[in-house]
Length: 127
Image (cartoon, rainbow, N blue to C red; front, top):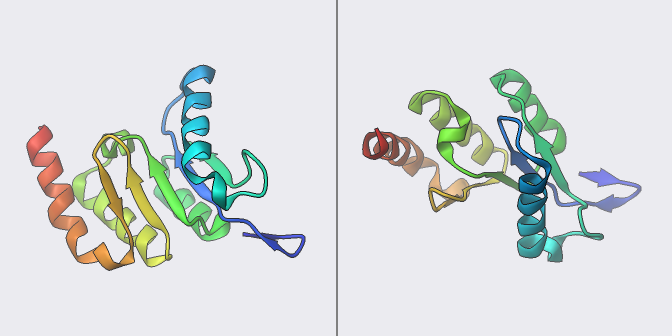
């Protein structure tokens, strides 16, 4: 995202439910620690999003143009494996990396072909 002539690298942090402030602060702190080299100031570039409506979620991704879409777990999306796969592929096609912390997933645009089989395997293994 460009603001005042400066390009900010945005991380979109998806949290689909209300969480306690201390847990949210832990997530922000962890993301700052890992990615602070990309920020001008601590906290810059982390956008917390709680939207579960897929159209609004996609529109937010197009608007903010994040470099990383971070989620704690794929299961937090509370969608079918097909819809999750399509959403992740959409994210990757926007030149945005996708990371699911608990699932140990870190995908970029070169991984698009692996999304469907890996998501379906993840759902099969955890069902």
